[in-house]
Image (cartoon, rainbow, N blue to C red; front, side, top):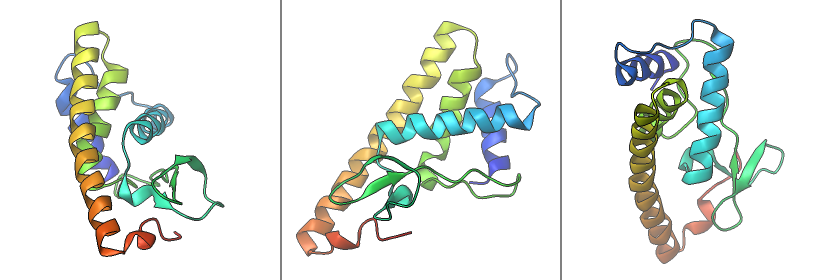
Length: 142
């Protein structure tokens, strides 16, 4: 998902009642906060690393870390997050922007559902890698 796709999807989730901020700095700040929120709730495989020189957000499985995602440079930049988490990131941003408490809660619940389902897949993948003895390849230096 590109940064432009994320903005469009977030706008769809917000509907006609709310819109994304016009200022790029505010949109990037919301994206950074959404990345942080997601990284605390699930394990994005794309963010696993063993390189301690990265900006580390938290410990990951085994000897790996969850690094801070890179921010996009322009609208065509691909998001630095697992593609299945793109809609969750859009929902989190919609949660930040919505003013109505029910809508804020709705977007947060939807984001958490996506992240929970994704985390189940990641845990299954990691367990399978452990069974195969390939676990040490998870989070290779990047």
